[in-house]
Every structure is written in structure tokens, then in C-alpha cells.
Length: 173
Image (cartoon, rainbow, N blue to C red):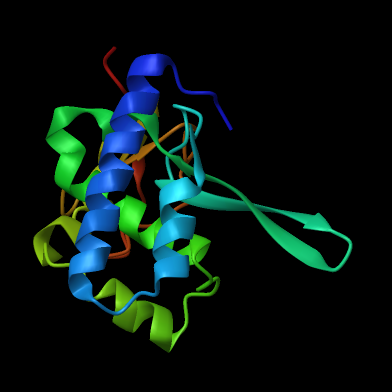
């Protein structure tokens, strides 16, 4: 976890407050669940994270599991990602209020988020984070698909679409 600076913490709290208000409007969460969501500590993931967009952290105290923080990727605090950040915060708050696994009931609650388009932006976010960190592009010579990577493939990998061997192309920085 990275400690957010005061500006980032203000943005995280504002984001959380908006999400909790939306959760209230849904009318299916208890006051205790909403209070837990409102009080959870907030933090940031490391900026070099490419796969995780948010995480709910827990600690153990004997047999008891204690909610610690909800962390979001710092890039989600940028204006362009606001709608997706709200969805990620909602997803993590669902974990924080007790829905710890990605089972059927969790997915049903997750699907109640009103902005369904924002929920679909996860792949775009992952691709942008990968492109930011990429040193190599694995490129298919046949179908021109590109896969941003941090290491060269050295001809070991094939294109998922057409099966052709991928070529290494250094990224321009």
C-alpha cells in the first residue's frame, strides 16, 4: 500500500462518498454495511501495477479477519478514468462489506452498478497500464496484433488469433 498525499486522499474520499450514496439509492444494503463502507481506510496501489486496479486488504487476528484498507490504482484518480474508478471502488466496497469471494451473489450485486459501460473499461485500463510499462511489443507478422510486454519473446510465443510466431519490436520511448 502507498499512502496517498492529501489531494489524492481527498479524491479517494470523494469517490467513496459518491459510491456509498449510489449504494444507498440501490436500497439493498443494510445501515451497518453502508457504515462499514463509509469508514474503511483508503490507500493506493503502486503506480507500476498493471493487473490490479483495486484491492481490499484484510489482516488476521487469531481466527478473526479484520478489514484493513481499500486501495485503488493511482491512475484511476485521473479525470479520464473517473467513471471506471467509481465502478472499481464499488467492487472493492462490496468486498469490504462482507462479500469476499467472486461468487454468483457477488456478481449479481456487482451487476447492479448503474453505469454498465464504465464496468467494461477494465480491459482498456489494463492495456494502457501495460503500454506505459512496455519495453517490447510482441507483434504478429500475419494479423498485426500487438502485445505490449516488458521482456522480449525471443520467438517462443505464438499469436492467439492465428498461431503465427510473434516478433519482438522495441518500444519507442
